[in-house]
Length: 233
Image: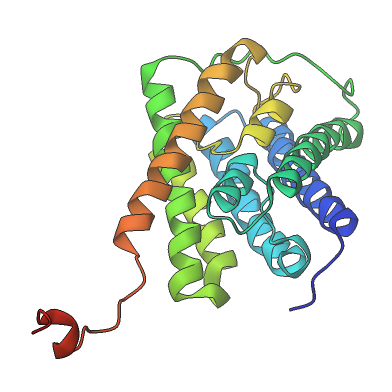
């Protein structure tokens, strides 16, 4: 695969995260305007998010790896598949791209470009949900790369679609997205004061997934020969 310069990889990460957030926030605004049914609004928010993830991973993955998520970049840095400086650049690009995505969504729907969300998302159940959501996301990514690299885009899109519904937090699983969503006082928002709990939970979930994957998916070792198992005479 062609190795793209860091500058192009950073643009890819910013663009991908921005389009992801624009989809999350924009579909939330559209759903809220079209229906007063909370379940239907959540479904209308869920399907575009899962779909855009699959699309973005397919088209931008060959450029930057399509992380679009600081904890994913952290995981790849821990696994020494991304340098510390590149990972830092990825995280900055993701956060800035996410904020731009919120601004874009607001502009399309004629809302103030930046808002402070008042949606309360806090407490032990919400934090546990974020640990679970992020653990599952990282586990799916690493397992998919090991066994079905060609299917990772669909695996991630489908996982997030499911996690919207089985987690109490609706599966943010992404610090950059959480930061961007704190700047929208709409269906998709989260109070800025609630961000630290979410971000800590997301980092914890990612680290737990790395630990499990390191043990569960360890590379198979070649069988030891008789000479290697017997003591020297």
